[in-house]
Length: 72
Image (cartoon, rainbow, N blue to C red; front, side, top):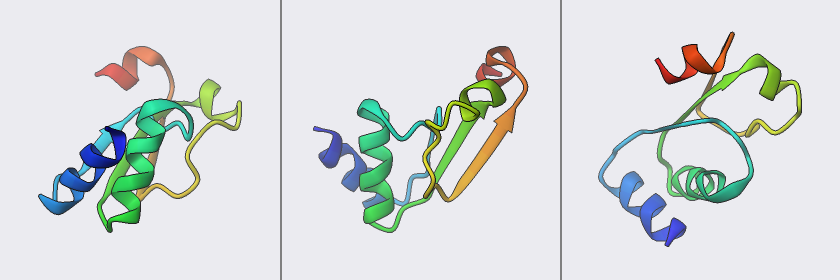
């Protein structure tokens, strides 16, 4: 299912904006979007980025101060 969603987003030229982790369902969707030539933006608070779970191949990674700022 993740691959299907990722391929469809890339095919329709829809950028993916998500939490920025390399793990889990959304990490798999991000991988597929990138593999298909799509654009992926991660938004992650610094304390999570410091745990080394951020996706290293994103088109753009935005580091924010808090979960509140991330959700905004």
